[in-house]
Image (cartoon, rainbow, N blue to C red):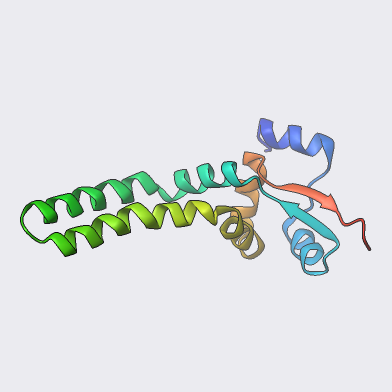
Length: 122
């Protein structure tokens, strides 16, 4: 049963099923775009990035406070940099997952993140 966002998105242009989506993307007859900011928020919620980031930041500070400055700094930087790298590449990550996993494709359709446009240059 389609969600309200999916029904609204399908009202403007019908979304292809997963096999059609993969075939059209590989044949370059379909242009797919995912808004970067929305993709970052979606992937952050899906991966629970704050729950990954906060313990690493705390552990890094804790290690620095007990005298392990270099190790603490490295752990802190991992907790700070990795979630930002994931968010920066979220649209590419989600598109790759949508091509290989029908469940992710459906989740992205339900969230209204996938935007389809036929290629005009062909």
